[in-house]
Length: 108
Image (cartoon, rainbow, N blue to C red; front, side, top):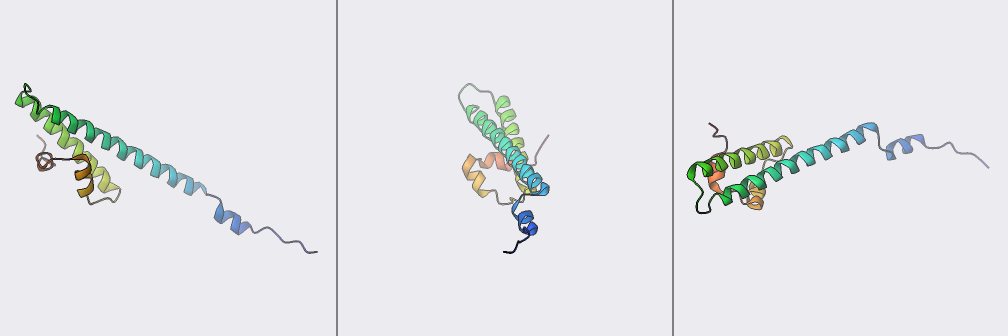
């Protein structure tokens, strides 16, 4: 009967390293931050839609339009930082209007 030494190299490959754990945590943080920005976009667009109701003055609507554009801009910047450069799907998903898209980058 012969003894075999354990394959330490195989154990190292199969067990997660500290770097793998760190990468997983960083990915989770990126996803959470993107989700946070997505919720901000949803809230800002909902507030803008409410501003179209009768009795809302134009100055209040303009403020909500600016807030929606700022939220969408921040969301797009975050997506691009993660390497997601095509925004067509999220524009359709969130129902981002052309009015909001036209204001991206225009801040006063």
